[in-house]
Figure 1 (spheres, rainbow, N blue to C red):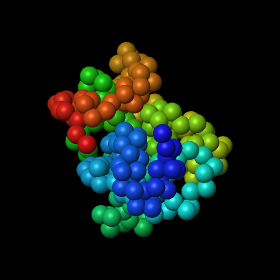
Figure 2 (figure 1 turned 90 degrees about the vertical axis):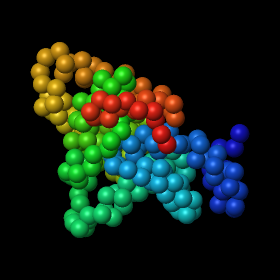
Figure 3 (figure 1 turned 135 degrees about the vertical axis):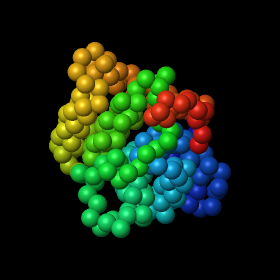
Length: 218
């Protein structure tokens, strides 16, 4: 099988089938990245990310995996998405602003048996760069160096950001779930929930924050 870089080069040279195969390989990763941060247009964001990779291929230095490079591009596409419809776009600071601050309310969220909506809401209350760090660590199992590349920060900063993100998540969970058994169960389920998120494909179940399940759509 061709590796991702071979497919990218073939696509750049006009091989549409190679582009489709590249998209197929990374559909789930991109979908997970955008689905808890965008109110709509997730498919468009996924397409725009791959097209941006195609257009900027020469800037990929191949020091890490194509997936890390892809997620770094996805992060820029997400920030552009936020800025396009904001009058205060020039002042958005993604180390402080949250998805909740931006007034985005995704209607569909991936959960396991609709039992972890508290986790989803808590993540959306983290500053966006911290939300990204935590989701990539849990959902995509990125290593420290990969996370540093996606976030464009030194390795030590990536680790400290991840530690801070975990602390902020704990604080939000305490506000949303309160103390006691519900909070403990929610925190305990985080790793299991992340495994379930990674396992979801086009046939997976989605649940909105009101608890209504629907078939997943891409």
